Length: 520
Image (tube, rainbow, N blue to C red; front, side, top):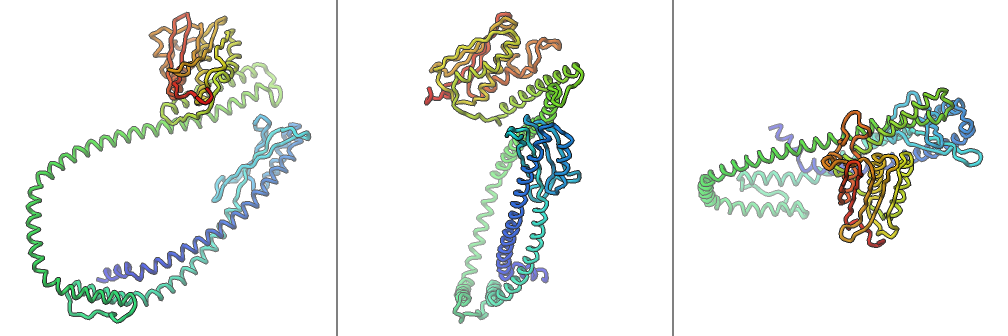
């Protein structure tokens, strides 16, 4: 009984009203405290940002002379001196090509904070004539902003507790005078519910809302007397209703059993579908995680390998001293570029097939696009002693499609054609327009060709017609499958016709919906 009394007191009207008032006061205090904290931290953050901007610009000016003279000792000395300030976590100096010349950082700095752990600031390093020599990039830390925020938070919590204490005491005193007469009425209602119809109703003479409630309760008491007289009749009706319901339950037993069996079958089917869906989602997540890991874990070191090998073979920091090392550096650079290209092809193909790759549509002049692609492939054709021919009329209607992907399609086809065409051969690009089928692009070559039965293999991922380990041509077999996927992403088709030792013809058809009628 004691526990029930405590529970009733906890859920009483007085407790609820007190909780509402105290909650409103607490929310107001919290909002005021939050605004004060935000104002304090915002002001200090603006001061630190302004200080960081000026410091980075001044340090960039100071680095102009040593960067011009490539004096690495002086550059490193200035960066170490710059790092003595607790407001900076790391500083990096790069040349005009974006290559790192020098870097310095706080030895014991932990890259984490409550508010914006690091912010990047950059300033150009220019010579006396205004020429750009490189760039200084600094990571700025805002530990002082976090400390100020913590101090303000402690101060506001103390004030909040004091206000909440006084507000709670005042609220409880005020509410008690209102709730007491209501509690007397509720006690009377409980006794009426138990059948005590002879008691007096308190508060009927009051002129406020409590008096109205008491008078309404008096009317309820009068009605309760009448209801008590009709109770026997109602009991008889309830007995008859229970008997009728029992009969209905017996009649529904068979139907419920049938419904239960059918429900079990549906639940089994739904469970199987949920398992299949969960497995598909897990497979999709695993694929996405694998692609993300590949992008980060392979692209980042490959870019570093390519950058350092390029710096070595270009002898930026001075002569290497041995021509053989230069050859090795060139081989490393070429191999890194090749591997990075293969990884990009794999990621592009996976994004297209998963439906996560969206088209960026824009107006495209077909003739200008063809000229751009032919210029990009020209050096490769000259290196292989292959002739290039182009037949793309300037008056062709414009396209409204993804220009980067359309250029990638044509570059893949032309690169394959040049790759598999012997010296003295010819590679051609042709484009025309038909109202029924839209734009058509055709790439032809006089290369080694493909047997008709090997065409499906050439269009499959990671497949090559010459599949031996000692094959003459490098590659993973992703060029044509990626090209086909990009064409189909535009709603088009790719057809490949080839004959061994005669050549290959690849025709791409983009439907009429990709035509820009305004520019046609």
